[in-house]
Image (cartoon, rainbow, N blue to C red; front, side, top):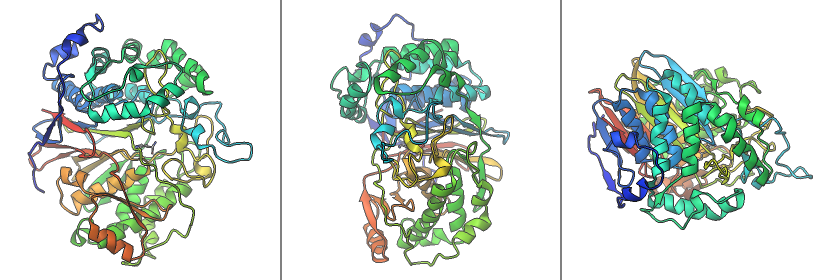
Amino acid sequence: MKLNTLSSTLKISVLALSSVALSVNSNAQTFLKKHTEINPYQYEVVKEKTFAHAAVTSAHPLASMAGAAMMKDGGNAFDAAIATQFALAVVFPGAGNIGGGGFMLARKANGELIGIDYREAAPKKATADMYLDEKGNAIPSKSRDGALASGIPGSVAGMISTHAYAKLPLAVLIEPAIEYAEFGYVITEREAAGLNGQRANFLKNSSAPSAFTKKEWKAGDTLYQPELAATLKRIQQKGLAGFYEGETADYIVKEMEHTAGIITKEDLKNYHPKFRKPIEFEYRGNHVISFAPPSSGGIIIAQMLQMIAPFNVGAMGANTEASVSLMVEAQRRAYADRAEHMGDPDYWKVPTKTLTSNEYAQDRMKDYVPGVAGSSKVTQAGQVHESEQTTHFSVIDAEGNMVSITTTLNDTYGNKTIVAGAGFLLNNEMDDFSVKPGVPNMYGAIGGEANAIAPGKRMLSSMTPTLVTVNNKPYISIGTPGGTTIPNQVYEGLVNIIDHKMTIKEAIDAPRFHHQWIPDMVAVESDFPETTFNALKAKGYTVTKRGRFGRMDGVLITKEGQRNAAGDKRGDDSVAGY
Ligand code: DON
C-alpha cells in the first residue's frame, strides 16, 4: 500500500471577526483560549494528512479540530468522538445533531468491542398507521416534515453512555461546541447554500424564527447560535437531565404543538441507548467489524463481501464491467434480504446468524452467472432521494483505540423544525420505518412487518460505522452518510483498499455505484467511467447517472504505525490530529 503523506488543503476565504464574537456573551472562552491553533473565523479544509499519533476525520474542520484537541489534552478516541459529535451539532447543523441519533462502534486497544445504539425510538403514542390517510394511502410529508416526523432523540444519551470509556470530564468535551455556538463560527459556501435553501421550510415548520433564519447567508458570514449554546450548557451542567428533563424537555414538548408532534416528557425521560453486539466477519485476512440491527449496515456488508470473496476482484480492476457487475449482483441479493428480514431486533427476530454466515452468502450466489445481468423481477420503482445529509466521523488515538460513528437527523436538516428556545433541529427518522408494506421511504427502501412502526421501536437504519483489524491489530475506521447507499459505499470503499490496493483517500474519492434490489437499476456517480457505464448497459442493466453520493471519512493505520486520515472530496470534510 502506498503511504500518502501529502496533505491537500483548500483554503476557505473568511474574515477574522473576533471582535464581533466577543461582544456576544460575557461567558469566558476556555477552550478557544487554550487552543489558539483553532480559529473559528479562519480555518482550512484539510483533505488528507498522516499523523504520528492520533487522528480525527469528520464533515467539518472545526469539529475534527475539537476532537483532535481533546486527544492532545490527554483524552482518548472516545473523548475525541464525544467532542466531535457535539461540535458537529453546531458547525454542521444539516446532520450533526443533538436532536437525532446514531451508532457508536468502537474497538478498544485491548480488543474489547463496543456498540452503542443511540438510534431514535418511536414515541409511545406512535401507531403502525400514523402516516396513512383514511383510505390507507401513505402521506409522505407526514413522516418527513415537522414534529410528527420526529423520533425520540438519542444523541445526547448516546454520548453520555460513550463517556464511560473516555478520560476527560464531560463538561470539557462539550465546551468546544458551546464556544462555537456562543461566539460564532464562519460558515462555508456549502453551509450558506444549505441554510438559504431551507429558510422557508424552517420558518414554516418551526414555531418561531431561529438563528438559521436571521438572514440570507453567504460564505464567510458568522453564525451565532445562543439558544443552542444555552442548551449545551444545560447538558454540560446537568448531564442527561439537561436534555431529557427540565427546560430543554419543556421546549421540545412545547414545539410539538406547532405541527402535531407526539413526543411527551415521559418519552424523553424513558429514552435509553442500547448496547448491541457488533457484526464480525472475515474478508481476505481482514477482520471486519460493523453495526448490528437496528442497523442493516453490518449484515449487508457481511453478506456482500462474503458473496464476492471467491472471486479475484483485484484482478478484475476497480470500476470495470467485470467487478461492478459482480458487486452489483451481491448488492441485489443483500438488499432484498434487508427489505424482508431486518428491523429492530427487540421487536422482530432478525436471522442475523444465518444472514451473516458464509454458507448463506455462497448459497445466495449459486444462481449468479458472470456477465449476465440479474433481475429483481419487480416492476415497482421507488425514487432515490438525492439529499444525503447524515454524517460520519472516525477517530484512532495514540493507544490504538478506534471509534467509528455515524449520526443523523435523517434528511438534510431533519424535519426542518428548530425547537424554539432550545435552538436545535429535530430529526425525521420516523420515515425510516416502513410506513406501509411495500411503500418506499425517501430513499426508495421498502419494507414490511419487520420494520413496521410500534411504540418504543427503533426504525431500521442503513448506517454502517465500520472498523477493520488485521492480525488482531487496529487498522481502519471508516463510514459515510447516504441513506440506503451507505452499506454499498462502505463495501466499495473496503474493496478499493483491500482488493484494489488504493490508499484510503483514493478509496474514498473513487466513483461509486449503487444497486438496492428495488428499484432494479444501477445508479452511478457522474464521474463513473463511461466505458463501464456503456458495458453495463450493453449487458442489460438499467444504469442511471446521479450526482455524488455520500461523504466518506476514514482513518487507516499505516505499516509504520502512523494515522493516515482522509476526508471525502465530496464535502467540507477535513482531518485533524497530531
Ligand atoms: O439511518 C438511516 O439509514 C438513514 N436515516 C440515514 C440517512 C442518511 O444517510 C442521510 N444522508 N446522508
